[in-house]
Image 1 (cartoon, one colour):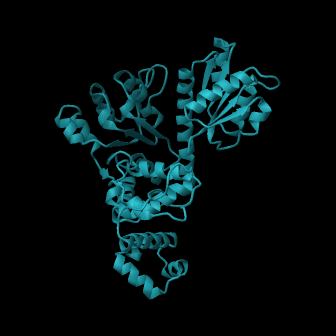
Image 2: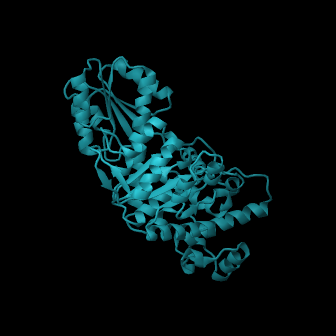
Image 3: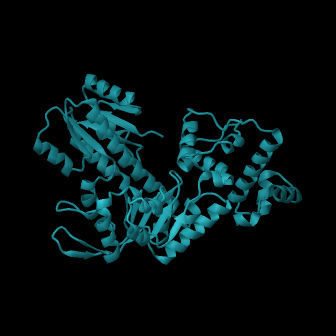
Amino acid sequence: MALSILLVDDEIEVREALGQSLEIAGYPVILAGSFIEAADHISPGFNGVVLSDVRMPGKDGFALLERCKQVDKDLPVTLITGEGDVPMAVRAMEAGAHNFLEKPVSSERLLEVISRACSLRETVLENRSLKARLAAKDAATQLVIGQSEATQNLRRQLRVVANAGSDALITGETGVGKELAARVIHALTGGNAPFVAVNCGMLTEGLTQAVLFGDASRKGAFARADGGTLFLDEIGAMPFSQQVNLLRILEERSIEDRFGRPQKLDIRVLAASHENLPELAADGRFRHDLFFRLDIARINIPPLRERPEDIGVLFEHFLQETGGHLPDAFQLSGLLAKTWRGNMRELKNHAARLAMGLAEGGSAPETGLAEALEQMETHLIKQALQKHSGRIAEVCAALELPRKTLYDKMKRLGIDPAAFR
């Protein structure tokens, strides 16, 4: 669901004008006219970001920033003022502000800053959710959801690569969950170590050196991931001229610090691509030697259309994550009829829209009643088997079926209960 913007300004005209700009851009906005009003909305895990005026009667924006950091140190707060100057901006950044804006601020600049803050907040909240779900169970079992043969094989591969401690190349279409697979590997081998993700598709030639390898003013991703995992997403899009530097670091496992001194790295590198890297190499857009260096272990994540038996379980899981539930007239056959070209990302977005009332559930395709009922039976039985870890007595009780009837149905539908134990 969209993150909220907590907008705090004691001037009602300014508050309403900024709020209108944000609402037009699609953000839910919470308006507050003072520190006291705003503080009521701040809580650990607040599903949004804060935009606050600095100068207000009573406690000002800096006091609100301090309160936000006390409640949730990772909550992005952008301060805005009509009397901005360099010392005030420096003070804001030192106090932990995400950004500092001076009135009058253009809608374009405002939305740019808010978009960055929301992206940062989404990443923090997703990481916290992952850590919470990892608390009690094996990461592969807890995070890679589904009971299809392809999904079970994927979990096995993730465990093997994690135990081997090697670098790996993760392939698959857009939206299949390549970063999730990387996080599972990382969690299986010490989730408290750093996990640093870089989208190489966002890097220009000028940015690559600073972002990956660092410069005089900041550490690069390799140095920040030391002792943990570096995830290089969309590696095929990395500028060709910078690929030789990446190859050298992968081979030497060493990088220069900002003083030019060599720094040994204890790091696992996981790369991902939706593109065919051998084809890119053949076309001269990706280095052959870099491909072979990355391709130590390869994990290919199958698209959703190749594991349709997972769709119902995944959809219900995504619904529960957003606080939704299956409608009474829900038709699983409608979900199974879709191709899901965006894979799990598209399925998750569909679940979010349904939870917000912006989409219908599974609309029934033009198919026979017998086929639709069979699909629903398959979904319900697999769902019960997964929930009760394949314990037949509990599944029979949940579905209110005699044991023989359940076994007959599982045989007819090709369901192996042992796969759920």
